[in-house]
Length: 366
Image 1 (tube, helix red, strand yellow):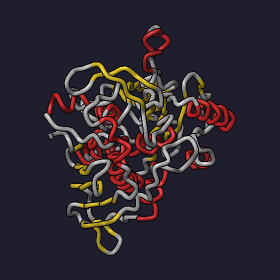
Image 2: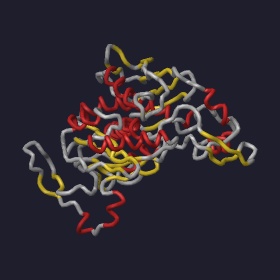
Image 3: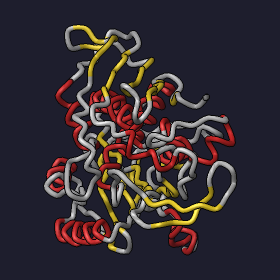
Image 4: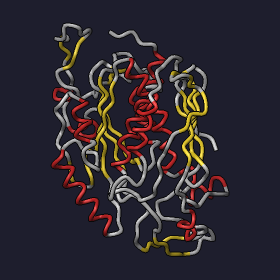
């Protein structure tokens, strides 16, 4: 199985299965002498871990991270960093009903078609459990980016048809505090309450619902990204679309920008009014902080769309491994909506992209 690594210079490789002994990640290319805050890494994992509220799966995992290599006396050594997260609450018996039956909208059939073998216990490598390893690696990438003055903030902008208003604040610390005060991780409290009630009602119906996560990256200098195949937004898109259940990615004005005229969509540059600022800023930011695949110094903005979780507690038509008509009903512990736990995954993947691009470009700030 290829495709377990991500990045060029700041490169990660994840390993492990949902119901195996453990999952983990190896980080290659982290610069030496970086202060590694283990409390921060654990706090990031706590935002993703299961069993944290009534609107998430009730699987109980502490997701306690263990360091195997690459860190000495609280600092990175420049050698590969290996992090391990033991699995503590596997219930493989919950998946006994789909040993030879393909679950609708899961990867069961395509795994069999590609490999001729699959781990039916939660999907093995295709399980979202794997993303805990990404979050651990992304936390270290965040620590590196913080040294460069780059901040990343994401929150739930919609659940089903419930939409949060656009955020106006530039104070990411304040937004983070508001976001973490509610279990759906929406930075607008009124909308958050509406989302929570809706998700809970969907859960009680044995069903699931999708949503969107919006992300802003502040402090990114101009010059990150390449103009052809390694465009910054292309790398961000690949990163986001590699997350389980993601069905859409847009940056800047996104799909709505296609409805505008050029006279409405163009971002006019003006001199940077900041006493310490260099280069220029733009009056609007339809470009989402990226021009020609390269960051322009404005906020980088994008949204990620998540489909409804495929496991539902209803009878569904399907087929078995012999190609015969069958029926299946979801069992076990599953999220009615994945977006509250996916916020930190979106941030982690964005951090991995920017850390890698930063090292690849060794950018001079304009």
